[in-house]
Amino acid sequence: MDIYETGVDLEIPDVDITSFVLERVGEWEDQIALVDGSSGREITYAGLRDAIRSLAAGLATRGFGKGDTFAVYMPNLPEYAIAFHGVASAGGRCTTTNPLYTAPELHHQIHDSGARMLLTIPQLVETATAACDGTEVTEIFVLGESVGATPFSKLLGDPSIAPDVEIQPAVDLAALPYSSGTTGLPKGVMLTHRNLVANLLQSQGTLKLERGEVLVGVLPFFHIYGMTVIMNLGLRFGATIVTMPRFDLDKFLGLIESRRITRAFVVPPIAVALAKHPAVDQHDLSSLEMIMSGAAPLGAELSDQVTERIGCAVMQGYGMTETSPVTHIVPLDRTKPGSIGLPVAATECRLVDSATGVDAGEGERGELWIRGPQVMAGYLNNAESTDATIDPDGWLKTGDIAVRDEDGYFAIVDRLKELIKYKGYQVAPAELEALLIGHPGVQDVAVIGIPDQEAGELPKAFIVAATDDLDTDELVNWAAEQLSPQKRIRLVEVVDEIPKSASGKILRRVLAER
Image (cartoon, rainbow, N blue to C red; front, side, top):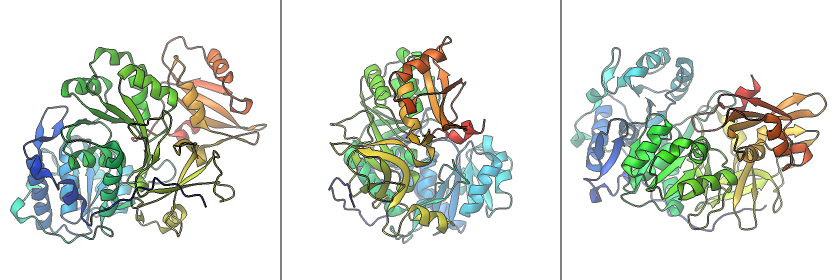
């Protein structure tokens, strides 16, 4: 068995997530913690601390306590942090939901999680009301006012009587996000206080976030990447977080310029825009010191294009909801484009041949397995899926195919279930996508396998063109010159948009169903 790790130990304090995040608030009480990027509204660290205690008190007076679930159904706003930590301080667990969900999609998560209360915004009250029908939700709260919901302000209580709940960090759940659901219904990922505290320490060990930095909160806080790496890590280390309710390139660039953003945590679609969109040239992005991409593979060529255009370090990290999420990060002082980097502290990993169950050899592909303190407690109400994902020795099977190079750096080459089988060969869509995105006529791309009677499957590329005169035949020939025969693109379709999840992952099943 070949186990890879950095050899860096980690001392994890036995404390709840909110106490850990707010541990040093007294050092920067008057500093701005959160800014609503749309309105400019600001909350100081002292104001954040007091609001969290007020919410915990209000929840306790309504009988909400240890083990109860509270749902948040809204876009990124400063109140997201108040809701998350107010619930955790009351001893509850926060299930964060996609604000783009329809009523049936939301109903599944509300019902499955057993949520008792829900917080949303006026524009989503109607959907939330429909979704909560037939669930355990007894009251819907809204930021502001809306018919059929209670104003959030009425939920806030006296911070001086906030409950002192005894929390067991290694046992009690703090967060209950749901997996992306690209196959089957989304599953509740049970993350303990210890999971989240450990991952903040693991992430900071490489990212080295400093007090006074300014982060743009564009990635959704309902997703574990935004929740941990932007919201909680930023607040733990004294940053100012500028929230965006949704991604809009012009507003994103404008906030970087006007708010002097120092670090931008993004997903590959945003990296594509930074590399290729003409609007980038209209803004001063000189404040950026680092761009980090995660949630899906970022090719070396695209990474280099962003670095050259923006003039700051571009790095990549890796993780998943089930690992809180970070397991690998590229060191800031030893970047390697196209790589997800090294395992973070206290994280072990293996590469396992999916066909034989034997560890892959040096330089060979294998499914990435992870073991560490950030690995989830399991899937809620789904022991079968838990057992299929985490083996008896605590190894979590990621479903991602990776390789490890001579420097110990890992790279994700594809998803286990997304490999294209062409005449017996395994073809990795991510490899083809990383090549095609480097063509000047390609704005975005996704590759899937199309059933073929003779070959088994044919690689097909869905292209979002960067120009009006893209010659697809020329594109195919250009790619063929750089690929071995079994990897060559056989079919091309030009589309207006590549379907993706909120975390930036390509929804290949949507393309396959077209």
